[in-house]
Length: 135
Image (cartoon, rainbow, N blue to C red):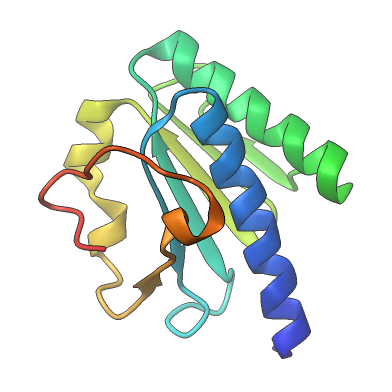
């Protein structure tokens, strides 16, 4: 994977994180999994308070990535239940959870060696993250 490819993936991840933030997503993280996984470069993980907010966040992410980067997801999961929506863009994978599902799976803790982006450095300022998320 070239440095330019990783920068492109990072750009997509930040667009997704910003869209989640704009829809009042909580506990947003961007995790660089490029060194620990071969199938994707970044995870974007956010929490929505309920079905409607999870749906709104997922829609906003799809719209932002389509408008700003001209990309569409190659896969979508969870749009029926809206407790965990997964949007697969190949270079990035977006997870939008309801709080209890996110805490149960704790995806961000599975790949402990994967680094997190400092979202404040990219203009995304949010409240403190739950104690089980170590950024």
